[in-house]
Image (cartoon, rainbow, N blue to C red; front, side, top):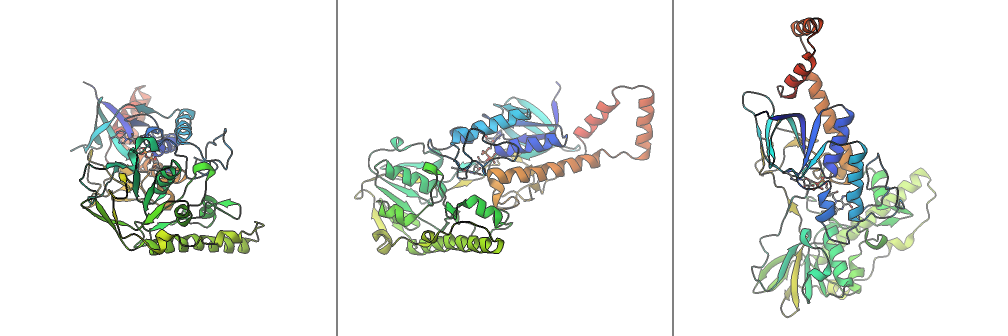
Length: 446
Ligand SMILES: Cc1cc2nc3c(=O)[nH]c(=O)nc-3n(C[C@H](O)[C@H](O)[C@H](O)COP(=O)(O)OP(=O)(O)OC[C@H]3O[C@@H](n4cnc5c(N)ncnc54)[C@H](O)[C@@H]3O)c2cc1C
């Protein structure tokens, strides 16, 4: 039985896989993308109904195509983002095969390349690019109560307020997902407790520019390493209802109860860290530091952008901040559900190669992994802060594709004897010589 061979196999056709395919195609690298569902499936079905992009349409896109039906300052709906990537892939005829799941990848022994097992057969590939996403397996921390008195869901499974039973909700985690879900639930009439940990909260806009613009001109999207100790600091932004700055105190004045980090559950009583005030103060400091950096940039470059002193006004502490709850009896408070907006973990059980450290994290340099021939794209901080975001993954994919093309060109080298033999074969009119050479390359030494 003949086995399908391919030079470079890309696993996953979200934005990372699509970007990868574009760059590989431009460099003439033969490749195939396998996607277990549909193109950009996570944008289509893996997120809540009302989600819109966190960045405006002019920013959250690839360089090669605009959202031509949207105002550049609008925030694309999740469906529109999925349609965008589908249209993008179509535009350059990306070789994407959907409905095919990669179940196992192993390095070949005694010959180059990898054996890739899928739910529809085996493929041999010289290289494998892992584009399976930065957010693979929803994580609910072990402190979650075992009690079945509450409906508990991860933010990945949240769709809309109607999905939850009547009663109050505890939302754990106040990054972009947690705060957006909490606000939606409050606006739907629910009593909401929001557990707020360390966060950054950039202004949605300042002096007529979106924060995406500010992070760009200030070089902050390009920051290459996480400041030690800030690995778990989440970013709270929202493009909902036209976009607005996340302002926790304002949400509390509108009726939400803010609490500190969720510490433990015992007999349906939840306890919180006494860190709410500190977390809010650090979030404010981060917010104000961006305003300062923006003002300095405007002054340095002599830009004519209107001043905005009101942006520096911090809303007075609401009661829940002045007198924070340290514990809450969930039953007495009428809490019937808990939404865990607590992030994701990796899931690389199928990738059985030597590309991971002892904690199971991919070992790589700008996506070029420790296992020769294996590459990663789309991971947070792959090369910089912007790496897991739409515009960032495009640039990382370009670098990874360039590395693959360079490696391929090494394998194309022929010594004098080989060149002579090939010339001889060509002169005798052996028509298939090129394809024979290419097939050798396709599973060449890596
Ligand atoms: C709630 C939320 C909102 C976000 N909003 C924004 C935003 O507004 N702007 C922004 O820039 N970023 C945003 N992000 C971050 C990032 O852009 C998205 O997470 C994006 O989906 C990542 O794209 P990706 O291609 O890297 O991964 P994914 O979109 O996760 O795509 C990976 C693909 O791989 C497939 N796959 C996985 N395993 C296999 C396998 N074994 N075989 C075959 N196929 C497989 C999956 O089906 C999936 O389609 C958001 C993230 C979240 C969670």
